[in-house]
Amino acid sequence: MKLKFNKIACAVLAAAMPFTMVACGGQVINSVDKTKIQLNVFSYNGGVGSEWLDKVIERFEADYKDVTFSNGRTGVQIAPEKTKSDVFGNISAKSAHVIFSEVGNYSQLVTQKSIIDISDIMDKPLNELTKTSDTQTLRSKMYDETIDFFSFSGDKIYALPHYSFFSTLTYNKQLLIDKNLYFAKDYDVNATALEEKFIKNKSDAKSCGPDGKTGVIGGIDYSADDGLPATYTELFDWFNMMKNKNVTPITWAGGEIVIGGYINYLLNDVYLSLAGKEQAKLNYTFDSKDKTVTIVEKIENGNVVTKEEKINAENYKKLNSELAKYQAIKIVDTILDNALWQTGDCDSTTTTMLNTQQNYIESYNNGTPVAIIVEGSYWYNEADEANYIEDTRNRFTDFDAKNDYQILPLPRVYEGTYADVAGKEVGKSVYADQADSLAVINANIAEDKELVDLAKTFLAYCYTDESLKEFTETTRVTRSLKYDVDVNKLDAWGKAVWNYTKNADLLLPYSSNELYLNNRTQQSMHIAQDFWAVSGKNVYSYCKGSGTAESYFLEYMARQ
Image (cartoon, one colour):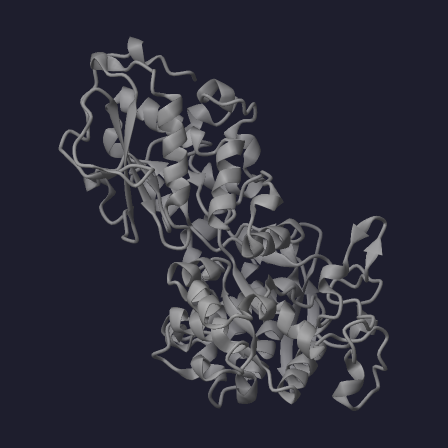
């Protein structure tokens, strides 16, 4: 759909009143340029900033500067609104025409007719929709799960996925190198002394890690996770070895526990690693077809009795009894019960995520090293925006020599050692897009065809290959779409995020299944406090106290 603005009838502008607009170069424009058509764009700028939007606006305005619109106007003037406010509270009253949100309830927005159908631009080559050379379609860039969910209402699509984030365990790779905190290749699995399981020198060979493969095999380099825990038994040994070397294993923001917070991030990641992508998807699709799932039938005197079940719409609540969920709760319970593995931030209800990020960043340089932080993939951006990175770099001249943040690939095997993993197909790491981040067009401009066409053109322009690459290269954040980036244009954390996502399986935690649509709060992992909760309790408050993983899980099995 190439827009022929000069042939479209005169439109009534939704942005008739004056506004203050910040141009890409930082220049403040205090009035509307009435010689151009106006487009209002809202962007939630938490975690991704606004530089990416400035860049795409600058290119779009330059590419469309000679396009003639109705009423004699030539060119486009885009007014960006960049805040951390909620835009969907009363969307019809908003002045924004195109909206890039942090969180949006897609099915509700569609049902309430708050956003515009963009199906007509989904299957046309982007070089026909926009002034670009990209010959792909928007639909071809989307994953099947996204298309399925976004088209739940009669095959029409009303949004595009905006930014993606996922929960992570970030670890300081340089700390592990300096302290020799890697499992040794072929260590004696019967060794009683922790020291016998770990390398003695940096040059020592390392174990296979969680992927079961070591070094380069068939031209593929599997060495990134070598020496890291291959099972959760090894993870606990790893934590104990850290303490022996005066390293605190893990931290998270205790001030966030009131909403489920980072313990649920940890639960999600452990569960995904144990269940794998296909089994975890059943929490949204409720159909295992010919495959079975290992279900906990009962727990007697600490012994877990299991059976195999096929999952369908009639028995989907058996998913509450997944063995992988029990094991995930058991692992997190073990971590919660070991106070020496945690920093003081973990129990402080006043410590915010920013406090914890700052403390983690400073830890190795100030002599109290912490190995891992439980966070979202966006955490480094938040810390950078708060100036913690630069501040710490300025205060400690050896900051860069002591800090190399990477995303930890978790074990896919519950217990045992590297010997139970080496050479076996244990699957990839799994990460789940936990955002409901949407790009939409406000339905309050539906009667203004020229403005709707312009909004669709701008939206499509933001999803060309050039714009997608630019987005990730600028923000260090991915989008759950099919595209590539120039890795050389990414900084260290950008590379860590991108490389992890390229080597892991992506779970998109939603579907068009009616059971899911009607009960998202309990069925969707990215609404974690409900997904993992029972009887008004959360895993943190229950298992941190006198409660056990077994008793909590029995309630979880029985929840309705």
